[in-house]
Amino acid sequence: MILQSEDNPAGSKNPSIRSLRTILDGLAVGIEHPAEVFGYLRRNPGLAPIVVYACTLTKGEFGGNSTITLDIYQDLDGDDRYLTIYVRQERYDDDIIARMDRVCERYEPALTGLTGWLLLTTDYKAPHPVPTS
Image (tube, rainbow, N blue to C red; front, side, top):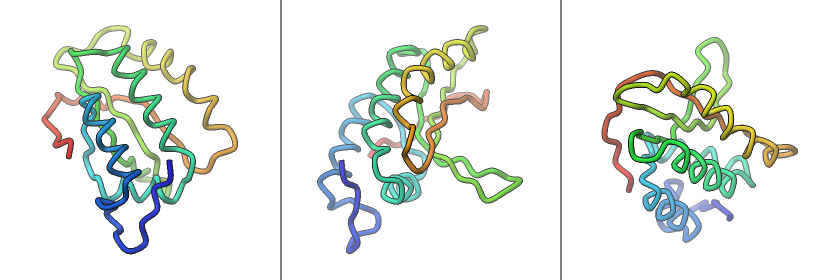
């Protein structure tokens, strides 16, 4: 999946970006800051299929009682930025961390040798609706 579109930085006319958006919409994964998320994916080739895989695994693990959102995490102590999948629940399960760890164990090996990173975490905030596309 190539996510480059020099003439359209938001990527809305790029078929690969449209395809990725369609897949994430189908999984009911919200995208908090689309321009930043897709910009990160363009700067880090190879991550897009792993994002789809990780979001599919996350949706399978947490199902309908969670909101799943893709966003950029900015490290407040440095310049690090990471693509991040957030899991949010109305009432947080006691085993949420163990469940996220199981998902990470399945997709993180695919990140080896790639630029960029994909985190799966929660911020323990209440779910809120995020537009898909």
